[in-house]
Length: 283
Image 1 (cartoon, rainbow, N blue to C red):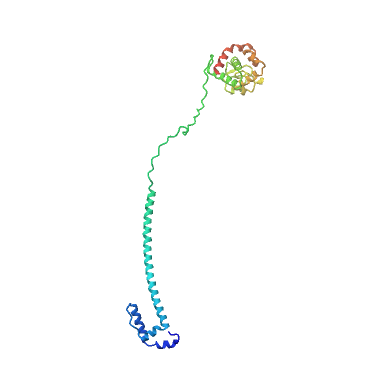
Image 2 (cartoon, helix red, strand yellow):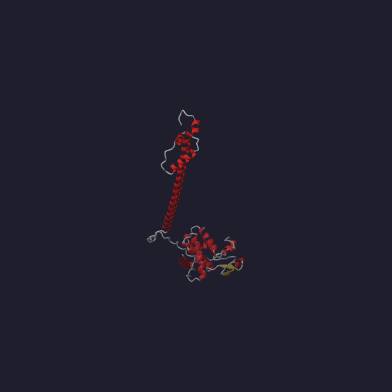
């Protein structure tokens, strides 16, 4: 449009019916890429107007945008399809690879046999030695013409003296005294009925004397029950002997008489040799 013309003048001149047909014909021809014929003056005038040029430019732009969008969309869809297929193929490949790796990890390589190591002697635990079961002490074999019962009583007398740490001479004095008083037998007394209630090996009638040493309860040696036990009677004898001053320098008979105060003081001397043999056999 010329700058001196008005908008109404230009639009009035281009109102003939040939505008739409010519414009459509020209558009179809251009769309089919044919060489356009020389336009007539009216069409040149129509195309030269500013509104028409703007409309045509907008239409062409829209068509090009639709074509571009359609092409782009087709290309994008095609790309998406190709990408999806590539991702699917990659997933299958990864899955196969992972499965192969899993199988490879699940099947460990055969381990080489390790050499057998023998434990050192210090590493082996030694069994603790088993304690032998306590056995009853063998009964001493009788010596010096004694019976087994007499020898058993002699052993009790010697064991008590050893436990009290009495010297060997005191053991001989005690054995000689018991041999004279009771012939190494545990006596009860017929005049003391209680004494017969306890284990005994013989029965006497001398006053109230009881046991291996014929000790009298009335003289303060102990109760009947105590004196009827050979171990207690032997302990009472050693205790009394230890209280006599200088008994170690006395003869066997003299030491025995100092304890017993017997009516027959020389009677103990006859048993000294045998008493010595018995003590030697028991110690």
